[in-house]
Amino acid sequence: MRKGFVSFLLIGFLGLAPSVAFPQAAADLKKPNISNINGRKVTRFNVSGEFVWCGAENIAISGGYGGVRLLNIDSGKILQLAAEKSYRGVACTPDGKQVFFLDNASTGKLGVIDVVSGKQDTIYSKNIFSHLPIGERPISPSGTHLLVPSKLNVPVQVSGKKLEFVPVPRILGDEEIDDVAWIGSQELYLLFGRSNPQRLLATSNQTKKNIEIKLPIVKGYQFRKIAWADEKRQLYLLAWPESEESVPRLYIFYPDLPTKPIRLIASNVVDFDLLPNGIAAYVQTEGVNFSIPDKAIINKSARRILVYRGSDGKKEELISVPYLSEGISHVHFSPLHNAIAFSWRDINGGSGSTSSVAILHITR
Image 1 (cartoon, one colour):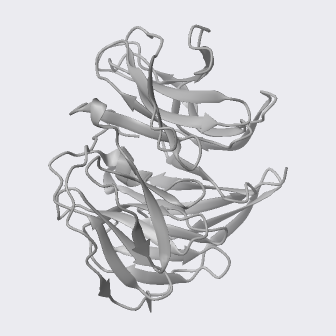
Image 2 (cartoon, one colour):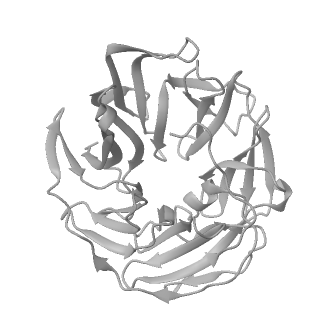
């Protein structure tokens, strides 16, 4: 996880600009590595980049100098959707039929690719603000609404399907948005503010109401990532330290009861994902001491752990890897909640590192 989260505020609109390039099969991958860890099947695919689930059977990948690709986790085959290396930050509709991307070569451009036809559309471009979280999580859980700059208010047709717009509230002005958490199809939380107390803006496109909530102050920390558990009415907050001598922490906050103290879930957490029922998965480090300025004391037994936290609060270690030789990050639950995708990196000292996309199958 990056220490400073780059953000994008989005303004402007050029309309839809279609282009068609039918998807092509990419070069075959090496045979995936399949193993059994703690009684669970783990499959590692020899591909790297930013990724998200795209339906229940595919992973959409960008970056890594490979353009936008679609990995089928059953066959291991890759479909090349776009060759442009500047396309990054992919997101998908829940049915996996459309892939959204940010174009680094064009300021503030959000585009979309139809998986079947390969048709590309530009939703908006030439935005003078920069809000990466909006581009990374533009689509609602229902796949019917799209988070867009405040100047956009007319629905668009994408692959024959109408998408309604949820504009960023104008009252935010030029505030930097650090993260986005969808509450429903037309409601969401926006995390913003670089000075304490940070704030949440609860915005509803349906009621047109905006409610600002002051977040609790955690001295020496800034909240950088949020996720919503609807059934529990809980907002998970990842707090990132302002100094290198501290470690990131994962908290639970209750927006319906903003005066209720936030609850610490775990320390040394570098990334997490959350389901609506409050089940969480997160990556935690153990055996590394950063308390001395400009120095890290790493025990020989130091490790990185993928932790599963049930809705009842019980925790289980799913995977543990040596801290010095392997890394795990970028955790994503599958749409069916029966698997977790994550990045698995082999650290080879001075010779660099190699990354793969790993799928851990869980049964609950």
